View 1 (cartoon, one colour):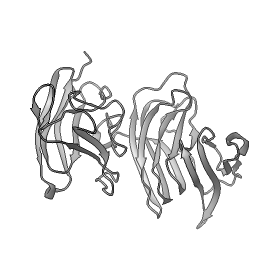
View 2: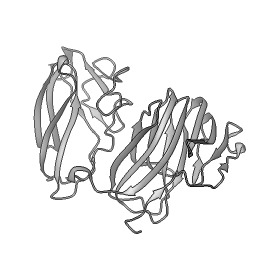
View 3: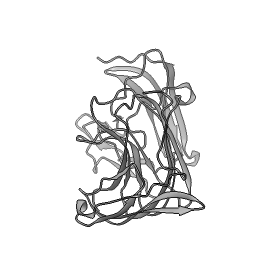
View 4: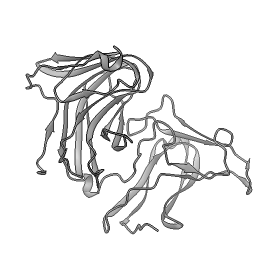
Length: 306
């Protein structure tokens, strides 16, 4: 596929009629019409949704009205061409939202196991706002169809337009974010872990910080540890939290590792490869300092699988 590929998915110049949704696919719960190229994918869920194609100031946009949601998500997608290639891409769109919901978006497998290759949680405002994210796909599942997925997790009205997927250069000369999950708004992500001598809920709790929004625009992950906890090893006042394994970085590329922290705590950030520590940096946080970005590694990659 040529690297000049550009998928302009919602543009005001389109004059084609919207595609009617078959209510029978969802037992009558999902109705309306979608702009050409988009497909409804909520029939499996207990979601009551109505889609309409609207026009404002001469521009067409898609409106998604999630009236009721009992289980699952409201989701719809745009199928990518079969010759879509791995590489560095930019996904962008404009959106606004009325109601209480979060929008998950990214590149996902159409068929089981429905794995996300890139996923981002977005919280649109009530007025039109722009979203843009550069990401890198190093490999694609062979022979599996892929889509740009849009997924709403609550009752709300989402307006969406100007969706675009284009080739891009890695931001700031880097190779994209190697974390599979770099937004922690939904609690401790899958495949993350902590030392097994602590009990979740008794010794340590992981939760969304309600009412708080971090520098990324998403709620941060809140970690609370009881002081003086008796464990099978000793009295301890600290807990070790490990991320899921990182994607393997290209050899020789410079890496910057870090995270944004806030609160009252002290500890150490470390990058490990098996039992080997690649880099570490201690930190001490005070509530009055607010959010602080801790960077602790910038060097050529030397990570190898054991």
